[in-house]
Picture 1 (cartoon, rainbow, N blue to C red):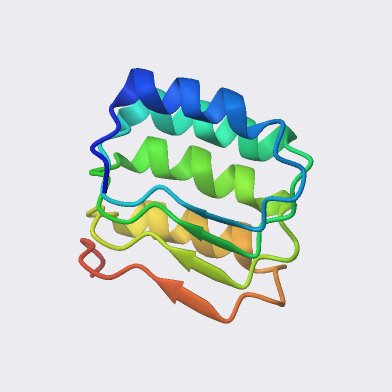
Picture 2: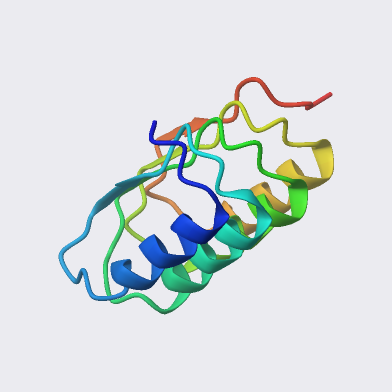
Length: 118
């Protein structure tokens, strides 16, 4: 809830790469934008941390930005909670999310509320 914009999220993501013991990441209620989302996704993809919970609620993510994050989360095999509510995700994005997470048997909480799912 800091209203971190794209540039700020890029800098934040860069610093996350060194957080080996990170298990929970909540970047909700910011305005990370597409560039910030891509930077965050890149960090999640190559990071040495093992996320159990990830939240990016209410960031006004585009489908492509959300897809970048979801694709990066496929490596996070310990993920039990994912919160993407309030981003207006479309059916297409949710299909991508389902395909990416179908092999994650630990996921027990998924919040995609306030989306454009039909």
